[in-house]
Length: 188
Image 1 (tube, rainbow, N blue to C red):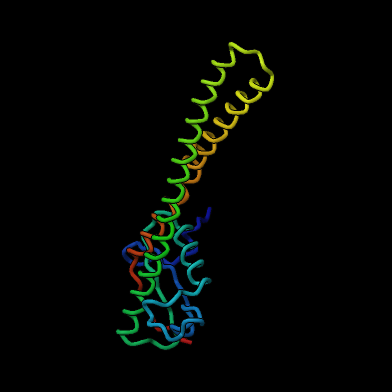
Image 2: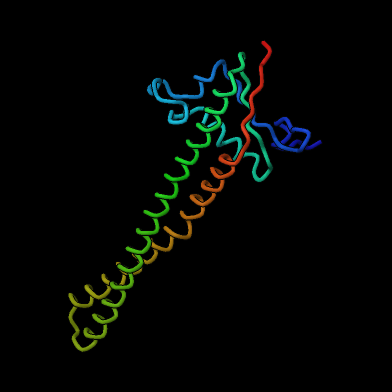
């Protein structure tokens, strides 16, 4: 029988995949350098973020929940703080991706406009040079044409090839933000 990636995960009664995170204590979800910060502002541990993100990427479009298994159950207030913390951290990551996309869009516009201007200059230079047969002028006109196409090419590659991975990452973060985080006592 062929196994799928989904077979690696536990599935709830309502057909949601369980992404299980087993830790000794809540503090293991966070970086050590900001111990005095409130939980909702703390930086999540990189290993936890990578694990959660890759699990969600791996399961694709299947609905899921995040289950944090602990040796000692925290009180409800602490569990709510952790839920808000995970939520706010992924909102933060989403905002970073959105900023990156805005920079990419500005770069696209700059390169595209620059390419068009260079192309127009190249066409004008070629028409003027048709009257004069100078090697230097011909090299200049060809150089402008090449620079124009390189700029236009870079702009199009930037927007068509690099845009989609950022959009997919934002959708992934949105799924994690919307996911339910539950806790369970891990019997040792």
